[in-house]
Image (cartoon, rainbow, N blue to C red; front, side, top):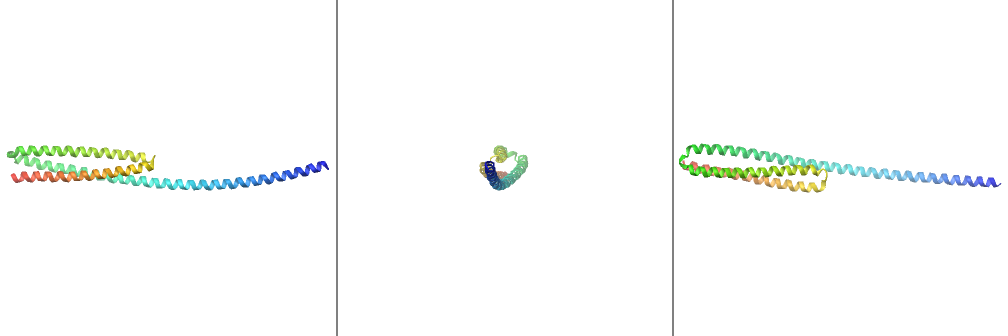
Length: 185
């Protein structure tokens, strides 16, 4: 009778342990499922953030490419304008021996304009290099660099507008000089 009692107690304990084990397994499975769901959610958010980041970086690169194109166009126009002005001045020098002093003043003015134009172009090149470096760094510190990049793009566009205005002003000044010399002729 004593052994039967112990056996019954042992059986009852085994059943309790099995029930506890089943309950713990079910709880663990539920927790694992919950963690898997959370992991999938985090991965989806990371994917969305990465795609958004890449799109914004690509947009910045396109803006930089557009500005570089405008800079190249402005440089080409400036070179063509300088070449045209030099041809006019050389022709007028040959005809205007009597106006030699005024021609010297015109050459000095042209040299000053060239130096100012070269300094402005050098400054724009430096600004462009700075923008390219900041664009590279933007992939590592996205939020701060995007704002900095926008400010730099605005500054370069302003400087481009200034350079174009100076180019127009230079052309007008040279035309006035040429018209004056032609009038004297």
